[in-house]
Length: 539
Length: 44
Image: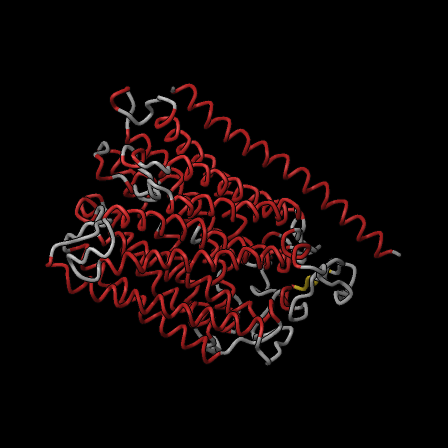
């Protein structure tokens, strides 16, 4: 059934972006401009975090290299994680959400545009603060991104990092409130909740996760701060405290955080696959319920990160089974993506290649996660390179591949030009080959017993480390192709994009011109069910 | 004219909805933060 709203078209061409660099980019309240700012920021952080990874892989190229001091190596592992998680992956998803959510639901902008501006502009200050610690006398944080006490309390830069994390948390919470308020209130007439694109659903659920867990992180790091500077003993056994308490509080935040970084990726893949399979998504409602189930389960699995601390047996068993339960809704999603492709009229443009690679490689990361969920096995794998391999399959071939796929998918809509399909594919094939050369051998290193977060290692681990490092350098270099394709498309490309861009693209975002005008849907659009990506959902 | 009225109504509905949602979410976030810090103070 079609829902008639008011106008059948949107007269978007009359509105232009404000003139002047400062006015346009610093004072912006426009969701598209702020989305662009987030995406550019996350790309910058991706390269900074990536350069830290290069230092790590260079040091681990051969045993006994000693390229950098061990303490600096520890700073690199810590900063690499903090920058990639809070600076690259999360802002990239917020940027994609900012750009696409209003377009997908037929809203003129985000519900709270000024707060949107503030959410973004907090981030550069937070990261400048955090990265500046690398140039201070005591160096940056070196106790790992988890900041376990008592190790993290030895760092002189703790106060800077804690303050930076508070700023990031405030930015994330404001962003989450904005996204929820937008999705719940700004939808075009006829865009019912169960007609929204899966990407919008994934962000709605992610935003609730953010609101629930960011204050917990703020509490945890504040306790670290007071333990170090104000004489408290939350985590100090000498004063009656318990360091394991920190781990519980941290992972109560940390596990949902993992899903904050993957649920929007699920949403992206659920947009790309139907477009290039030219079929509605298989099991739309199941996809939405699966995301909600994963989000719920994320709150009751945190202690699987802590099996090795010596939990009571009952807790071990509970957290093991609860964690394994996550495989059920995740399996539903993987099944539905494959079923969407099944019998579809598929073509393999760059976004689709990234989506297919995501489905296969994320599943590998999921399976190694299941292995880690088993308590007896985890005692063997804990704190080894197996864990490093596992979460990089989830976060690089999962989250980062989804972000790259999304960039290729929506870039023509953002810039009005087609990117170079040839160079997009070169980027894809280099990335997919080298990412496996980089991370797959780390499974073997972990199973053989190589601990994570060490600057040097036994010669027995030499060969796989060298292969991994070569993969790392080449994967890093491959991302320069990505940068080149994006910059070329934004500033130099000649081939104009059509409004719909992709033959199989469906949804409101493809009804606006390419590039999307500065203001869209000021008049609420008509929502027709047959135009939605997931087809009819009434049955 | 009719469509202008309809748009005005949609706009007003959105405004009220946003205000309500933000109030509820701000209270939830504020409560979470206060709870975290109250707990820190109590445990101290």
